[in-house]
Length: 485
Image (cartoon, rainbow, N blue to C red; front, side, top):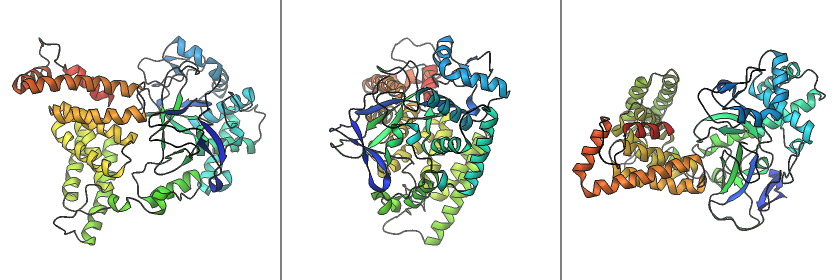
């Protein structure tokens, strides 16, 4: 296999170590490079719901008859994965169970290194061995967990030729460099993989690139291989360093720095952290006619919000969605006169409320909260940001479901413009969005021609009555589009 890495080169990035920079000017939405996983595994919790070859979430998967652990879409996926699975299959049968995903991924990495010496293509810019493990920087609890994983690995692969130090090195590499894999629509984390070239791209809290997992075969990729695409978010000049965000920007700088230090073992000194950019907006109090609430009241509402967010998460995990709605409404009522519309706790509550209300089909209220969420995000995120694009898409679909076709179509178009850059035209979710954009555009024309007829047809569709016009959208179609989001 040959990877096209002509757009980039490795360089000495000073205190950050190695980095990647461009060898030519790049434009927004351009794929800097694509890379298949060196090794990847499905999460333990989803092992029976996600194909172990293509990482698509599917119903009625076929189980491997030998190890009875791996599941596949069909014989094609199973055959495509056999070369990678055969040693794992034998190990699971002998071990009599499947170990956790960290152990399974480490085993796959070591088997791949043994087979290919850590370099699997002409375009791989670094061997797996050369990646940083940061084992020496780990805290006591992390080292304890590492030792347990190493012992479990030795039980799983008792005949390994590698010593515990080298095995620990691979575990450390995975902890610092593992990339979360999503399902076919990029909506749920389903596994973890290692991408050596991607590991060379350094972090910035306001990056110039984004990483998207794009399933499916490519011109130089094996069929069904999970692969990432590094995409430019704006114009990048020749010789400029390429950066991605290791953590979400929607946290204050001190929290981002703390997470980066613990997970990746470096002190972030990017401009956003050094100058605490937008931290004031993320913790802003509401200002009305030049007046702000007292510091004591702001503190009280923030503490209440944190407690409520914890209760919301517990209720959502338990599946008690009506309790989630009750908690959200109560908290938002307290937040409204005190916290600014960009305050992180307010945005998190709006997100939870809009998501659950949409799930319960209270679309009008969900749309109001989703719209306010997008307004806040637009003041905080880079204008071309995958999180912003996804939130705008969800808001647009929620407005559409609520019957507010004009706002719904406008937001779907805005989301489409963002995702065309962050995901590209061939990503499954962009294709879904394009279909929704065309559908809402057609409905909008009907609405502008005759509002009464449009609303009558929409009401009939919601009642699942037979429709006489092709322009009508069935309740099943809308339910499907909601499930996709």
